[in-house]
Image (cartoon, rainbow, N blue to C red):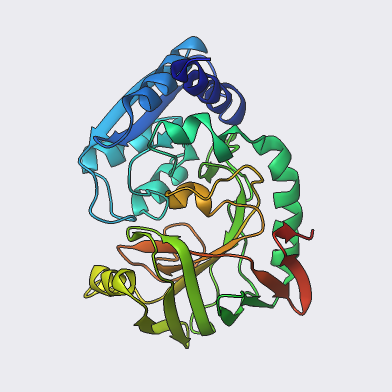
Length: 323
């Protein structure tokens, strides 16, 4: 099977099954000049195949994940029925996504931008099947009051989650107006209550905008804020990346991966969906996400081999999610 056919097969599932595009609907495909042309070409072709109207919007890559797109693209997103963002920086934590959602658009605001991510690994999993477990995990988190996350690498962090609504449980399946998610499907996440996260977070393997980690990045967390960053070259790069960025030290998210086909690749978009892992984030927790902190960045870091308890009940351990 050729690469083009493999990309087209995944794109067909996205357009026909996960987005359920109907004849006459407009699909806005947002990319940048780092996006593999085969990705947006396949999405456009599959949109045409089901009778939809594709609009491909290309922009200059944003400097950081969470930065807003050009005004013209933000406006197009609000006018479309479906939005699929496959740019090299995540567009999930932006105000333009929130406005598009309010306007009734549905879709995914962070998807793999390289061709490889559409032909192997997490994008080839059955998102409809993953959604069943995601709904169970969502319900368990929604009843929870506190979370405790530990890992062999040294993560030991507690937070209050009471009253926070878990999101991401759609697992990339967005068929109704206003439903938004991210690709690959396979996570449930929520923002901890502001000011409550305490302990140590050890990021391993990869982090948004920083890339692969030769050494872990260690965050000392006090009253919901990153008070100190330790580690090697990547830790210094992270500190420089967020220096002067408003609210960038906020602990913004706890996410739990559910995708059994997710690979330990170089891309955070796929790795953070890996079954039985966790990721936590610095920066924005608002933009329709459920928190109260706004920032120009939202930076995910991986936590491997996690043990997660909710109100003392183990829900994730040894690479499995126990719900």
